[in-house]
Image 1 (cartoon, rainbow, N blue to C red):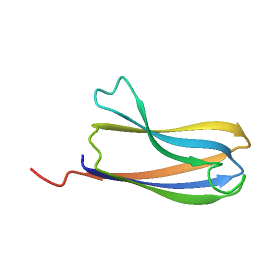
Image 2 (cartoon, rainbow, N blue to C red; image 1 turned 30 degrees about the vertical axis):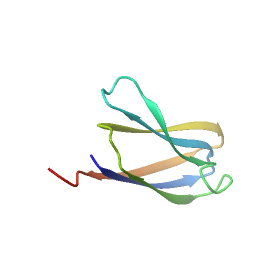
Image 3 (cartoon, one colour; image 1 turned 45 degrees about the horizontal axis):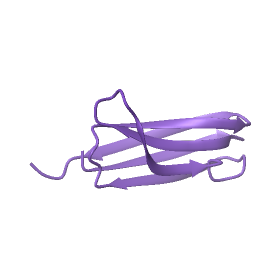
Image 4 (cartoon, one colour; image 1 turned 135 degrees about the vertical axis):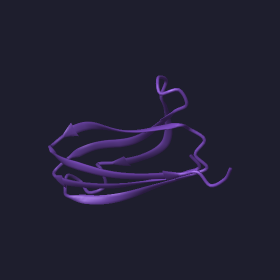
Length: 84
């Protein structure tokens, strides 16, 4: 995959951090440095986009670490290769 995008939509009052991790083998995961904190609205429903260019990984994972509150997260992801 060369490019990927994540659309995040959450409801409720979640407070925490969403992070994107990557792996080549699906076993060992590394942070990509792309994160959404709180997610972005301090405990309120909101949405966000994360755009990843130059992705050299086979696998991506989205993880959420909750600090407080609760809610529902919906994520849509797309990825594609740009060349042969």
